[in-house]
Each structure stands twice: as structure tokens, then as C-alpha cells.
Image 1 (cartoon, rainbow, N blue to C red):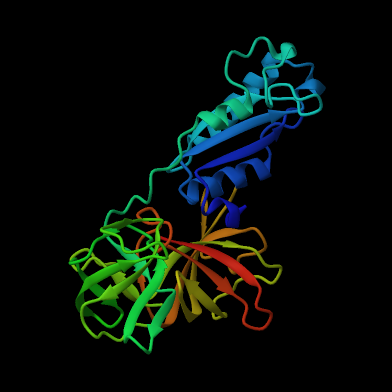
Image 2 (image 1 turned 60 degrees about the vertical axis):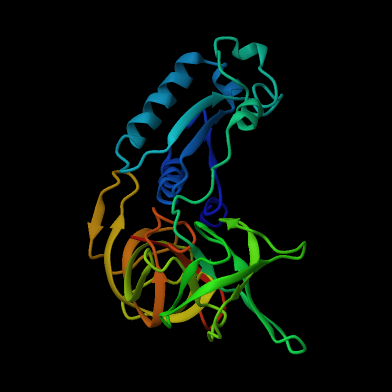
Length: 314
């Protein structure tokens, strides 16, 4: 759920009409809100097993709406009754759900506009690879623009070194570009001979991210072994790798009430809580609500190489 939702524009929360809103429903909806997904479709399935009851549909809509009203940032929800057994309201409207006046599930998905780029309009360019040509002396920095746009002549800042330079050219396989925006994979050539490597960040010089050795983040824990203070993990943030020590567990979210339980002893499998990390080297970060790429990271167990946690920077 966390992995897929991190790049999604819309989430479908599937609800069994017999059981209604259960803990898994609340957990998935909370994660969708935490990950900044602005649109949620609540597909209320197995309507055939409740007699295609409009009253049961209305009860689930009321329960779900009461839950999302307690979220700090509640995603906009669309409720669609379906019966996947025979396809009622999945692709086309079903005659047995004639009391429902809205679109079928696929019809709604096809009408929802995609998210228009990242919310941050200042340049963020994590360097993925250094491209060199020994014969011509060319040096470029390849990666995917994570925020804002860039054009030749723009002044930029390289972090963590703090060096300033200008963009000399924007190169692609199909030729040079006059400008490039968030989501585009390009190679930037710089005007000055600046030592830049994988994991460094090229950004807007006057609207740079914070360069930190400590950070607070909401972490979704995905391992059987619990997360405890003092534990050490590898951390991957954009294209940069470092090591992290868990300094403190601030709280843990109780899914039934959405209350934050202060100072828990640990985070167990599927728990979500706020954590403070101390880093072996500085990271250039934004808050997750500002930029989904520079505001997110994963934690890796160095013994097994398993991804054990996903974090959203507060």
C-alpha cells in the first residue's frame, strides 16, 4: 500500500458491504491521507450479498465520512456501490443498483484528471548518474527533475557542497531542450567545473531545501522485527544513501481513534508513528506535504537488505 500509494494520484479503498468500515479500511485511508493522495474512491463491493440495499450503502457512507472528518487532511471521497460477481457498476451501471445515480467505477476513473506535477515550484534535481566523455571533455549530470523547472542560464546551488553555478545546457537523447519541468529525465551540463556526484542535489539557490543531520518523520513500519530507539538502518533519500540511528519514538497512531499515543516503546508491523532520526551525513530535505520526492525516504535493514520502513518528513 505504501509503496504503490507513494506515486499515486488516486486510491481505491475496497469495502465489503457485509462488514463495512473495518480497521484495514481506516488504515489504508489514513495512509492515503498521509501520502498526500487527494482523491479516494470508496468501492463498496459485494452489494449482492446485502440485497443491493441502498440503506446499507448509506450506512457505510456515513461511517466512512465520520472517520475521515477526524483526519487532519481528509482526501476527497467518492462512494460507488459495486458487485464484482457479475460486474454491476464496475464497467457499466448495473440494473440492480438502479437507485444509484452516479458513474460506474471505470467511468469515474477515466474522468478523474491526473495530478498536475509536484506542488513545489522551486527546482529539485537529485543527481542519479555522472555522464562523462573523455574525448570531448563533456560532463553532465543525469537524473529526474523532482520539482520546479530549469532552463539554460539559470543559477543553481549544489547541495551539500554549497557551490553555486549556472546551467549551461539541458541534454536528452533526442537533443537539447530550452526548458525542462518536474517529471522529466534529463542531463544537466553546468557552466563551471563543479565536483558533483550521485546523491547530490541541484536546486534553486534562493529556495533551497533544508540541509539536516536530524529529522522528524511519520514512518510506516513494514517489518516483523519492531522499530526501537537506538536501532540503526540504512536510509535512502532520493538518490542519496546514508545511515540513520533512531533517536526517539515520538508517538504511534491508534487506528480506531486516530489518537497519537505518546512515547511508545516500539513500532510493530503495520504501525505508523512519528520518529526522530540522526543521520551519518546531511540530507537536503523538504516537508513531504511540499514535495513527495524530497520529502520521503525508505529505511533498509543492512543485514538482510530488506526495506523495513517508509518515511514522510514532517
